[in-house]
Each structure stands twice: as structure tokens, then as C-alpha cells.
Image (cartoon, rainbow, N blue to C red; front, side):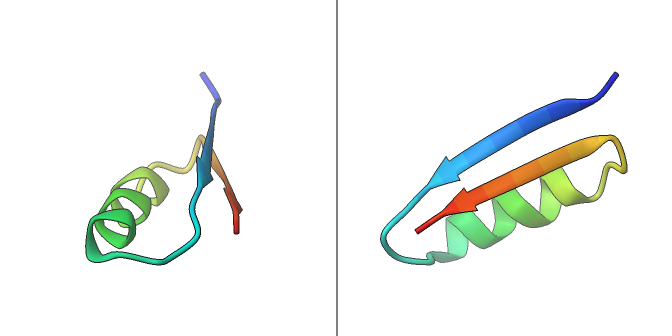
Length: 35
């Protein structure tokens, strides 16, 4: 099942990187990042 995650941020943080790395480890996930 495909899942879409949308992350809105003004600044890249370590926690955001860890979250994106984890979510991107699954092929079915789609991640949208808005700055």
C-alpha cells in the first residue's frame, strides 16, 4: 500500500533528516517536502 507523507519546514534539522531517511527506506512511500 502506497503512503504519501508531506513535511513542511522552514529549516532542515537532524530530526527531520532521520525521519526522511526512515520513511524513504520503504519503496512504497512517497515523501513531499515543502520549504
